[in-house]
Amino acid sequence: MSFRKKNKDMKIAHASDSPQQSKKQQRQQQAAATSNEPPDGTSAEVMEWVGDDPQKAQAALDKEQSHEKPRSGLSEDLQEVIDKANTSDNTSSESEAASTSTTNEDGDTTTTTTTTTETETSTKTNE
Image (cartoon, rainbow, N blue to C red):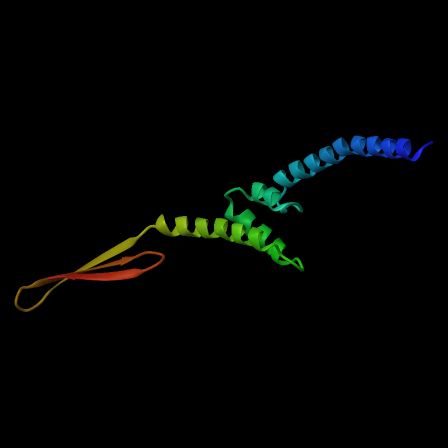
């Protein structure tokens, strides 16, 4: 058998292995999509698994940071998902308000309203 023919046969053998690897990768991706564990894979595969879920993003970030050489781009993308969720939580937080009215000796009434949210407290006084 000539070197060319042998080399050609090897290329054909490797080409037939590729679909099997693709199916294996597809099975891994499907398993990861339904799993609570972040997938081992490319940044795109990890981000696909995370979607917009901040809990998944945190799990993936924790796993990524545990590696000897974490991928900085992936870590930044995961942190953005977490930060975005925290920002939307703060803007949709409920407020509590309490008003107190007092009248002094001259008959003047002062109303104090205190509003409390998750992020700040403000006090207004109207005379």
